[in-house]
Image (cartoon, rainbow, N blue to C red):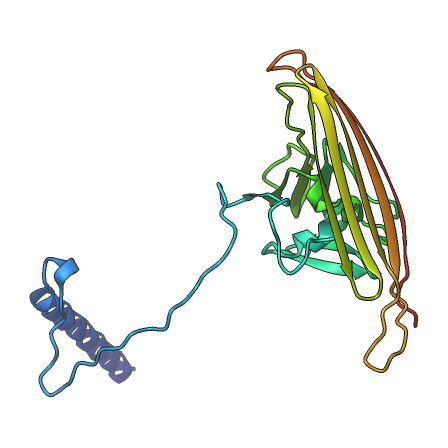
Length: 269
C-alpha cells in the first residue's frame, strides 16, 4: 500500500511545480499595459495574423432584461401580421401552434394557454374555447394598438399571476388640441383571394374625441403544387368604438366597445 501513496505524492508535487513555473514565466513576460501588449513568440515558432468574418447580431432593444416593448404600427416585412400570434412569433422566445389558415396559439418558452396572461386595452381575455381552438391572440389586430409589452417570467403580477409571462396590448388615442379629424386606411391583397383591410378614423377637440376602428380579413382555400384545393379558408370582422372625455390635460374618461366574429377551416384528415 506504500507504493501507490508515494507515486500519488510525487505526481502532486510535479503538478504543483509545473503550475508554479508557468505562473512565474507569465509574470515575467506579460507586460503591465495590456492595451499595447504583444505576447512574445517562443523561439522557432511563427506568428500568424488573421481576421474573423463579420458577425451581425440583431434583436429587440429592451429597457430591462425581462420586459420588452415594441411598436406594432411600424413597417414590417414581409407583410403586416394578420393577428396577435402572427406578430408575437417574430419576437425571440415565442412559438405558435397553428389554428387553421389564420389563427394561432402563441407560446412563450414552450408554455401557453392559462400559463400566459393576455391583456387587451385594459381587459383580460382567455379565448372563446377551453380546448384552445379559439385562442385570445386571434382577436388582436396588431396595427390597431399603440404598443405591445411582453413581460417574461412570473416576476410581475401587475396583470395577474402567470408562469410563462404576460402579453399586454395597449391602445392609446392621441388627444386633439383643436377640433379636427384624422385617420388611416390600409388595404392588402394577395393570392387565393386574400384581403386585409384596416380603417381607423378619429374626430374630436380639446374636450374629447370619438374613434372607430374596423378590420376585415378574408381568404379562400389555396391550391397546392398539383392544383388540389386545401381546406384552409378563413374570415374575420372586428369593430371597435371609443369615446373619450378630456376635461383637462391630466384627466381622461374613456369608454370602449369591441366586437369580433369570424370563421376558419381546419385541416381535414
